[in-house]
Image 1 (cartoon, helix red, strand yellow):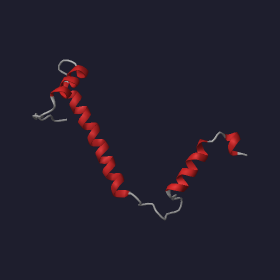
Image 2 (cartoon, helix red, strand yellow):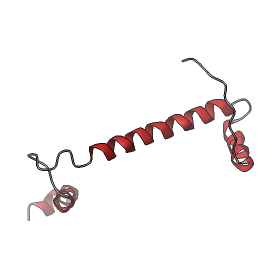
Image 3 (cartoon, helix red, strand yellow):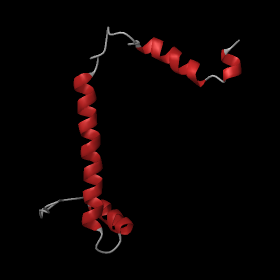
Image 4 (cartoon, one colour):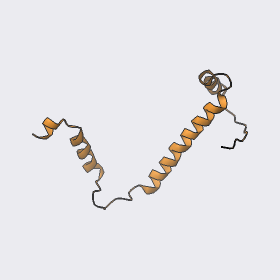
Length: 83
């Protein structure tokens, strides 16, 4: 992967914590991994937001109340579920 140099402004205390965790000369890799994780979460959040409700009305779709009942049933021990 090609690398690019950038200039970031961070709160001094946060930078101190990063340096403590990343160790000497590990700051760039630490920040890069943290930003990559945040980008991945944000892309997932946006995808979920865009596709919310896409399956509503299709076979097998459950509303939130039905989903709750199904999850609770899955968590019951087998001997209790048979009663």
